[in-house]
Length: 244
Image (cartoon, rainbow, N blue to C red; front, top):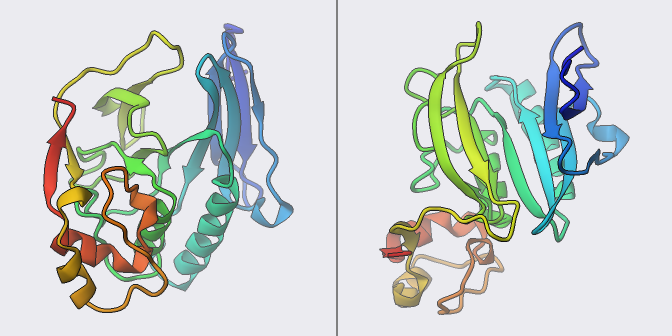
């Protein structure tokens, strides 16, 4: 038995293609939770999706494993994974996405990656759906392989990368999630992109936006930008601090 204490709901998706492996999500039984079904075409992915009913509303909690393949097989897997994540992101629920994605060459500060249709495809998905990535320390060697993302940048707090568990060669990522109205995250300065003071004329001079419409606005979200125009944002949108 996975939980002999009886304190957790066990949500699991065992790997179908070979013995061993898969993904697992344990949710405290203080909060009702249920597994979200996914279409049959995604059944060979290592993914489990759980809705957790909290005081602040339902959370869609997605746990993922992505194998470290940087070849044709890896591109095919990532294309299917992104298609699945896009399907799951079509919700009004707050999304939390965690897992070992094995994407070592993404700069999560600048949202830059190799143009390999694997790491770049995942970054483009995150930008398009406005997911913020919280882990900023390496989880294996010098790479951030284990990620915590959310559609609500204020819901995750007190995140730490800590020692490995058991025989794993990855560090553990420990964090808290706001699930009650009286919960709060620590206040302090946060680095954000200052779209209100962006150089929009310079941005336009870099070329067409392929359908993206950029409007100067204090509340402009990351998902308002086309994924193909990320480099324009880095070049023309200054950084600022918030939450002071």
